[in-house]
Image (cartoon, rainbow, N blue to C red; front, top):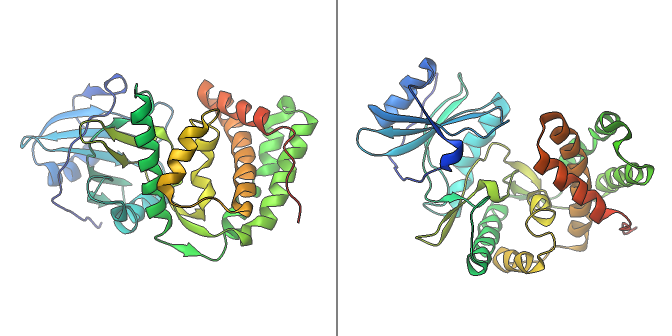
Length: 312
C-alpha cells in the first residue's frame, strides 16, 4: 500500500442541497482521512446523484477542509491521481485540488478543497458569465499546452469502436437519417484522428466541474477522473452543445481566453464527437433517468441534422 501526503489546505463548499451530514466515513477510508485531517469533526456526503464514484467533505478539528473520493474503477483512480500530480498544477495555485493522500488498493484519494461553488446552477450576472467562460478558456488553454502529440488517432478509434453497439442499444429512437449521420461521423473521425493533435485533456470539462469563487473572481476546475491524452475538441463538446448553444457571445469569450481558434479539421472533429457523444448520452440518459442529458442529446441531433460534413 502506497500513500502520499501533502500539507496544503484550502476550503470551499459544495452545493448544500446535494450534501448531507453522515455519522462517519466507511471504516476502510477513515484511517486515510485521519492521517491527513487528524480528528474529524464533520463528515458530509457530497456525491453526485447517479455517479458511481463517492465523495465526502471532511472537516478537521483544526478547521481545515478536504474531500475524500472513492473512485468507481482503478482506471478512473489512476487517471485522476496522475492528472492532479502531473497536469493540474500548471493551471495555478488555488485553481485545482491538490493531492493530500492516495491509496490505490481501495481506490481512494484525499484532496484539498478549492474555493467556490459549481457554476452549474449558479445565478450569475452577464458580466460574471463572461468572466467565467474567459477564465475557463484560459485554464483549458494552459492544460492543452502541457502535452501535444502528433495525432489523436488512438482516441478516435476508441470512440468510434462503440458506435455499432450504441446504435443497437438506441433501437428505433433515431431516424434513418440520424443513424446515417452517426455512421458518417464515425467514418470521418477515423480519417480525422491522425490529423488532429492529441493534448492533455480534462475529459469532462463543463460547468458542473467548474467552481466559481465570486469573492475572489477566480475559477477552479475539479473532477479529473476522465483526464487522458485526447483530441482538444473532446473538451469542448459539452460546451458547444450546452451553455454555448444559442449564446455565441460566451463562445467568443471562451476562445478569447483560450488563445486560438480551431483549425478546419478540429471544427469537423468537434461536430463528429458531438454527434457520437449525443448517441452515448441518449442511451445513458434514458437508462438512468437523466432528463438533462437526454434533452442535450436531442438538441444536438436536432441542431446537427442537415449539416454536411466537409469532404477531402
